[in-house]
Each structure stands twice: as C-alpha cells, then as structure tokens.
Image (cartoon, rainbow, N blue to C red; front, side, top):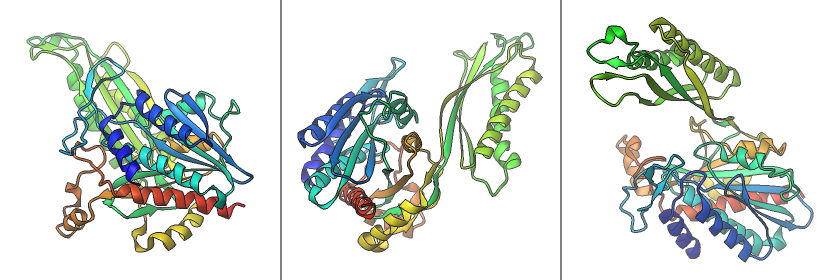
Length: 406
C-alpha cells in the first residue's frame, strides 16, 4: 500500500477540474495497462477510462471511481497540498483542490485493481474498473453512457455497479444502507430581465435586483409550506449576480439554484413551484420579457439495491465489526446510478471515513462535529490511512459478489 499512498499524494497535488481530467485519466490508464490483463478504453465521455479484465465465467462487476476536483484554494497546509491554478471552461483562472476526496477514490481503485489481479485464482468473472470524469457537475456518467459506454461492445454491461465515497466520519468507519441513500439533484440557471437605468431614477426602471431578492425569499417557502414535512427536500440559491456599479440599475439579474429530493413527485412539485414563483414575481413587477429558466444538470437519487446490500452487510459486518454502521440517507447527490440504470443493473454505494479518529472523537465529545473539515471545504484532507480501509472495503465487496454469484 505504500506505493498507492504515493499515488494518492501525486493525485492530490495534481487536481483537475471537471471535464479536464487529462493527467489523472492518463495516470489511471497507464497503471491498468501495466497490469497486463486489462483491455483499456480511454476518452469515453471526455476523459473517462475503463479497464476490462475477463477472468473466466461469472458475474460482471463494475467498480467506479470519480476523478475530478473543485475550484477551491487549498488551505490544509499539507506538504503535498495543491498549488494548482487552472482555467475553467469559461476561461477564468481558478485555484483547484481535491476538496471532495476524489483523489482517495482514484488511488484506492488502482490498488483494488492490482489486488484483484493478484488474487485472480480466487475468483471468476469480469472486473470492470471505471474512472469517471465530471462527477462534480453530475454529468460525467451520462456523458460516458451517451458516448456509447455499453453500446460499442468495448465494455460489457455489468451485473452490479459498486462505488464508495470518502466523508468526514472517523477513519476506519464504513457506513451503508439499503434503499434511498442519496438525493436526486437538479441545478437551474435563471435570468430575470428588468429595465436598466440611472440609480437616481428608479421610477423609469424595472429593478431586477429587487425582483431577484423577492424571488430568493419566496423560494424558501417551497419546502416549508408546499412540501409534506415527512418528505426530504432542499432548495438552495447558490449565487446571485447583477450590476457593476452602485448608481446603475442593471438590465438583468442571474440566479443559480439547486434542489434535492428523494421522491420524483416531490422533485417535480419543487420545479413547478420555482417556475410559478419566478414568473409570478416578474409579472408582478411588470417585466416585459419572461424570465429564462435553464436546467444546468439533473441526476437521479441513488437507491441502493436491497439484495446486494444484504450480501455486502454480511461480509462487512464480519470484517469491520463495530466500525461498520448503518448510514442515514444523505442530502448530497451522485450520478453513479446512471451507469447502473443504463446497464439495467443494481447499484450500491457506501461511505468510508477520512477524519483523524482522535480529532473526530474529541469533536464529538465537545458537541462540535460540525466544525470538522468536511467535503467541499478548503480544509478537507482525509488522513492517508483511510486508503487502507477503502481498498479493503471495495476489494471485499467485489470478492463477496464474485463468490456469491458463481
């Protein structure tokens, strides 16, 4: 495992934004190629990489790791902290860091691939190792499917799709559940068209900032007043931008929104409510143009397969003991289930802890767990020992399913 700790440090130092994972993809492909048993396919849906190892008759298992990083400046102080700056898809320079821990996913899947190749006399079936781009945009899995992931005959349709994700639980802990695990997610871009002019003459203008402010406030009533309290739902306004000067009323205002839910019915109801509120506020303000509402991305809820989870629970409970726990449904979102749905296969995703156990338990005793660095924080830095747990979990899951399906 020492080699893969070095791989982790290397990937951590070379983060790449969503859709720009060229170096990381090359690293993964070169490593799989060095094992001399994988058929390697690259450039799927952007920088997607897939290695296929046919090891006799048996089930086909797809193990997925996502590769992309986030536009954040790393503040961890690690000796291998990222100092990288990249131009994003709009040409803007951004600091980049692995603030969601995808570097642990890449390094651990590489290690699992080697472990399973070395142990190939103990299992039969087809091992599919997939390194996915653009998970943070929730469109990388769909891009790979749209690019013919399963349709060209290069990659067989799996019988099961497995994935794991680091979080800020204590290192050593594994959490999993049957059924709904993560919410569906949709992100929207909204443009409000007003009528600009001099700030001294608001009566001659239609102020999109006032309209947008009212919209943001009213959007918060959707969950509190339109959704059953027993249903999980989140509506977030992530950005609001308008104008460039204090004495000019701008022509338009831009909002971005994110919504999350478990139920397709609830999701649809939220989208309908957003449209009604946005259009209603613009009409009330006298806007001459209807607002533009664009869906930026959408991904389904992650629903873990009951039968597969039951098989894995038996293995995980035996191996991890009291460190294996039932997880709560999370309000984060993932796109891995798209890889499963496109193949007509079940999916299971679990989480492994990345926080220093001593620091985690101290924070718990003081009621300050919320102060620990978490995913998407500029201080998020999983302890390197969590790689061992991730490798054990994914390898154990694969071997359990290969064995159970012979």
